[in-house]
Length: 349
Image 1 (cartoon, rainbow, N blue to C red):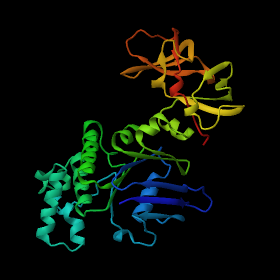
Image 2 (image 1 turned 90 degrees about the vertical axis):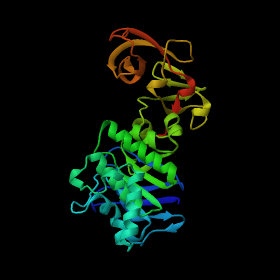
Image 3 (image 1 turned 30 degrees about the vertical axis):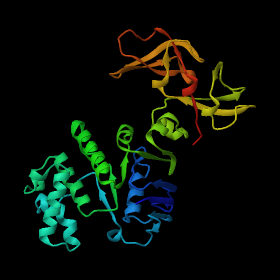
Image 4 (image 1 turned 180 degrees about the horizontal axis):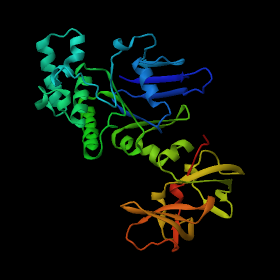
């Protein structure tokens, strides 16, 4: 089922600012949409409003065209997977998974069979008779996922569901959710502050910052063409400059950069102030392009697959990903090019 959040506002004190200031976004039916943003911007609040656990001050939530305003949380066809599994210590794993079916009046034999089937789906059916204290963090979260799916919701909401696990276990859980999404075709909304996680999991992203959705689209669209300054910063566009557009060129201090009309938010003719950016991984080593820049490496950080270099100083510095082959040192001269096709104009936010 498709989900639509429209104009949602929320303030937690009369004197405070709006945590959510007119949040609107769409979750297409059958999509896995990641709600991405820095910590503390209200992502969990949006999820709680969708679930009916928190009341919005204004705005509406629609599920398949039906307004959910006034519908009690337990009557909404939604379930939520939280950061912590919150399993019942006195129930074994199978009874934990079956709990929601028990509340709905499903007979014991049927709910036990459903619990075992969903435990198989998440790969821990052999743990059915164990108790939560006997589970690892990753196992407990798999059980919580099975419990959320057992009631067959129309939409699964997940609030930073892998925050409590690290490393390979986190990746395994991400892959599990991706696989279940493909198998079940269920609409899912996953909250995360981790860009890599959002890009790995989501077929759509909605970026929340400053109380509003500042960008929405596929991971590929937002990676290559973020529109807002907030999105660009969050998604790693660390090279951003303000200047004057004139005659198809961006004038930034003494630097003059050729830009691409198809990457501009407005016309290139005349004079206007503009802000442009480029990802450091799109900066090319060497000259030969439209925007060669020569400077000195002023900072160098080994990241693994590449070395992150700062070339030059101050507002005109360029951050580039150089080959991690050991040839670069602070103080070395280097020439890089800013490819015209990867320079993008950004909206102020």
